[in-house]
Length: 126
Image 1 (cartoon, rainbow, N blue to C red):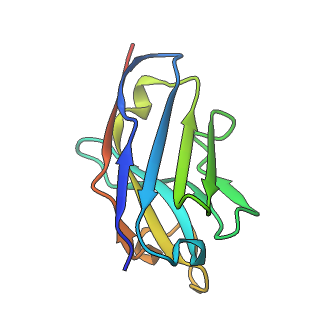
Image 2 (image 1 turned 45 degrees about the horizontal axis):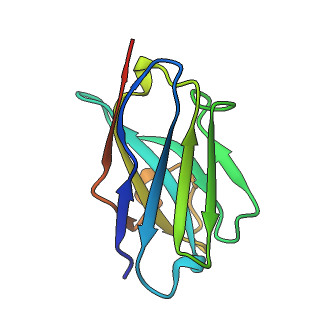
């Protein structure tokens, strides 16, 4: 069992930056790939970024590539999402999620993630 709590959301102007954090409970954090997903009003939840269990690889949605950066600290059980050059279309509730490292499905697939945080609101004004 893993419990996830996000923080760091808020209101920012277009072009600004925010850093989201996700704190995980439990001793098995390093056995999970950690992802960030977002859900805008009236839209489905979508993949944003993922970092593999050992921090060795990261993957991003095309819409955020070059602007967002995901990282993790297994000693502190945390995963972060640095968001730069924010756009109004980045406005959404951002969730962190955990996927078992040996899962055989796609790392982009929302259904591969077993544990979810409640989310933190990010609003980007134009």
